[in-house]
Length: 294
Ligand SMILES: [Fe+2]
Image 1 (cartoon, rainbow, N blue to C red):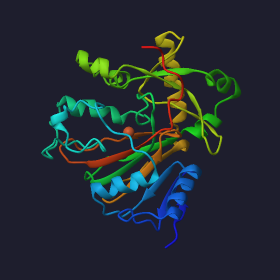
Image 2: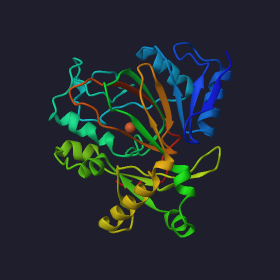
Image 3: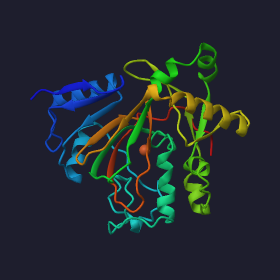
């Protein structure tokens, strides 16, 4: 069955038909999926009954994976999934829903702010692939905002102003916005800020996009309050509804998105219900800008 890619909703989201993720992919399928990701920035695959090994094999057929080591507040002996997965569920290693005030859950609530995955790493993520094993009875959508359209809609003065700006990203900055500041010295060291360009250029389409994320908490050379006010305005601009696709999850959905061209956020759902979502991640090509000397 040939791969078919049909636009859904806004111009940057599409549904893929004719791909069974549980199976090894042909060279043609891999090329079609990559072309789909260049043309769109969010691809939806419905009804994928896959296990972790199949999700991992599919992800690896598209590129080199990024490991999730030391990026959450789970201690190494508290991991529910191997480090080839980012565990974005609300479950502990025995598959029990976190207590409402569990600090691992509270840290995870940072995913409800607009962000781009791993923008806090010197080499940030390329694609994320999120598979739904269980979904809550209500809420829990993931929303995506298209940073190419957001860039295009900026006036020329603002485009010129952002062109060469460098931001500092850290998970500490995103959590600060929620009032979560309870970090140990070890965690503060682990979450030290990295630098990212504010404007990125897509390597295939050459289109520019705003590389925003709630992890961005500063602009190199700017006073912090001014940088944060400026970034807040940009996020407000970039997440207007005309730039947003809201994905309503069904069990078995796999959604793949390009972190270079989109931001996303999870929406609230009942705190006592399990939401088992498993993310594999493709690593980016390299840093977006040289890092400051340590
Ligand atoms: Fe995310």
